[in-house]
Image (tube, rainbow, N blue to C red; front, top):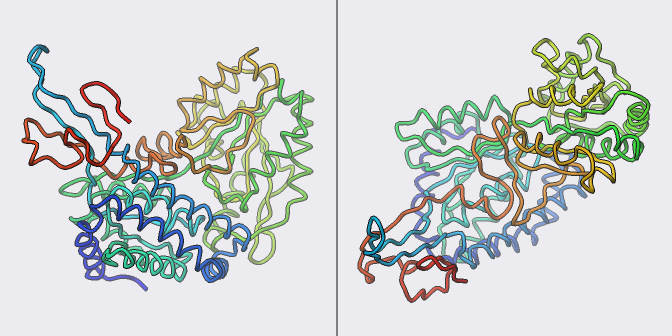
Amino acid sequence: MEATAQEVDEAVRAAQAARPALADRTVRAAFLRTAADLLEGAKDQLVEAADAETALGPVRLTGELARTCYQLRAFGDIVDEGAFLDVVINHPDDTATPPIPDLRRYKVPLGVVAVYSASNFPFAFSVAGGDTASALAAGCPVVVKAHPDHPALSELVAAVLRRAAAQHDIPEGVVGLVHGFEAGVELVRHPLIAAAGFTGSVRGGRALFDAAAARPVPIPFHGELGSLNPVVITEAAAAERAEAIGTGLAGSMTLGVGQFCVKPGLVLAPAGAAGDRLVKSLTDAVSDTDAGVLLDHRMRDNFIAGVAARAELPDVESPVTPGAGGEHTVSPGFLTVPAQKLTTEGEHDLLLEECFGPLTVVARYEDESEAGAVLSRLPGNLTATVQLSTEEAAGEGRGAEILAELTPLAGRVLVNGWPTGVAVAPAQHHGGPYPATTSTSTSVGGTAIERWLRPVAYQNAPEALLPVELRDDNPLGLPRRFDGRLER
């Protein structure tokens, strides 16, 4: 199913031709809601196809499809409201220093967006996922590079989106779809592609990021590449509820067979009796977790090899040995290591790299300074979590200090929770310092739309020539800042 360079070019040009049809916000919002309705109507067929290709199971996939439809409708509401346009109007003021001319600023869509589907979320981070939904909401057509783990599902979902477009007189080319590695490279290099969104590995994402930057006209590349998602468990928290923390950690690290981008991959837990209780609880819970199927054999092979390489390091122990389960499955497990081994550069740095699958590393620290030294060496992450005692959460002890240590490391900082589960909400931020993402933006939540827009200001433009969004009488009723006053 590898698309040729000509087919990629045709898909991009068809998307470019569809841009004018997305100019009307009312049409865009209706299109997004119709897409959600049609996806729900095709639920049984889509879930069956997704399960056949991914083995993620009907329950998980049905929930993910519901999330995807909710996200499409949420962006429909955002488009209707119009606040994302960031309208700002300043009338002339000759008394200012320097004088202010008539200035009117808002945001316009970038153009055709290339979307690279993820393997582990065949609905929510794929053809109709967050990148596509937010790009369409911004007024940008998309060309999706399908993931090879679910090509048939990708075709089905693209067909649904095109049917939704047709109901609103939007050309079907507004959602293009191509398959194949070379097609993905051709896509990011195409001169009509204005931006790209990617979710996947550090290696693949970095190659595309570099290609986007090396173009004659570089483009924004919003990539989610990899994340260790560290967890810090204070000694007081372990003493207070070691068993509950161990059980919660087991559930989080094995959820979805450890194939979530926010899986906790490194846990800083205290040495001593409280830490021992926690490890015992984690051991019991993980031991009771069944083996599961990873998304493809390449991932399974990489997981088994990655576990073996980590387990062979000096002073690394395996209370529950992860690795091959049956012929097609993997068994969850975890490794322990003295945190001191991670405080300086060395062979144990492998433990500070993401291992995709149901594995976490528990680093046992002797004191707070040792835990801090490990944190200081971590790369950027999507999430960072701290488990605090009741008193620490109430403001006593080092709770606030630990949050301050974690904030530079991640885009989302959690207290007394687990990072798996990314709510689709206006305040959500799913991103983080590199290599978690290649930009400061989020790929989940309402502000994901900002990735596909650019600001433009008009100076001293006659009212009759201005875009309707920037006229004084505000015929569209948009939220805006008018001569310094916020109007809603």
